[in-house]
Image 1: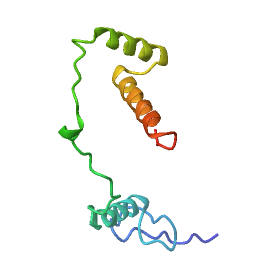
Image 2: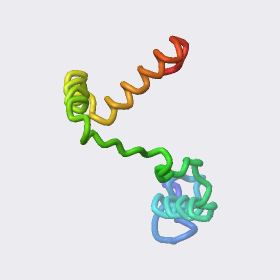
Image 3: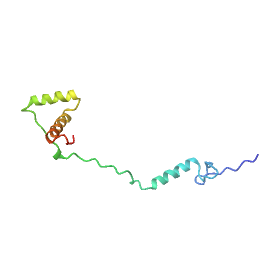
Image 4: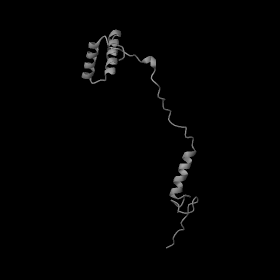
Length: 107
């Protein structure tokens, strides 16, 4: 039985090629692939929106010093509804605006 001659890697000349038609061994093929990937422009990526800093004009600090009973009621509602206190306050405001403007307002 005749053995076919083993084709050696054209890059490293140390290992046999991965197939009779391939010019490279497995490790050199991997290196070639990474070199090609590295030569591409690495700045081409998915356009992701940049995180923005919160706008200071959208922040309101509310003091309940003069209205502790109102804060206690809102705190009780937030615990009942399992919402954080600030989210409960926003929810109450949105519901109030919805009632004031009519049922067609988006909440």
